[in-house]
Length: 106
Length: 183
Ligand SMILES: [Zn+2]
Image (cartoon, rainbow over all chains, first blue to last red; front, side, top):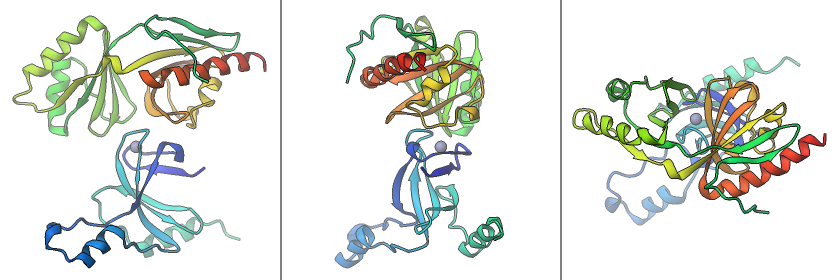
């Protein structure tokens, strides 16, 4: 089971308390009526689907109830960080550097 | 398997040498939502400081307040104090906007004690109970059901269950109670 750090509860907790919420940082258009069909399709359905570090939303459903964001490596399932909703997207290069430092030397 | 349990009668639900599971009498419950600037006035009106950290409990007399989220609390009190809680919050509503909803009947409380009380909780709750200090509580999950779990003592817990899920969870607790005694 994954262990996920909730930035609101400030605890690292079992995955069973959380629900996945799809890719993060996708802003809903201010005026959907102004969008073309293609732009609206892209907003609704087109995602980056990365192999590697993925910015995604989670919700602490059986806990504080809050949505928050996370960076999870889709290959290793490892969480690089979690942060509160509304906070800026963290710098991926810095996160990867920090993760490499924590990696035990071989 | 769902047990047919009379949730209107407080009393022992299951008992073994390992653990005792009992249904507690009804209490008044309120869900309180408020933003940071309003918390001071609400604490004053209620006579209990709203705990700021998720999972912490504040107590004064018979009133207990648990912080469940960044802007969410549950207030527990004896049934005869429900009116007072409503009134003191209503009195400051104009200057201190908040949401107070009575949810007394939504849940029932199960009391779990005995030498293997913690073991019984682990049959449905994936939390590391060593990280839950005595005197605190958490909203968590028990076999897929959202619950609030209080740790009142080393082997002394309260579990708040939404009424409609209670028969399912209580049936599991009854099974676990017997199983743990046979270990
Ligand atoms: Zn949380």
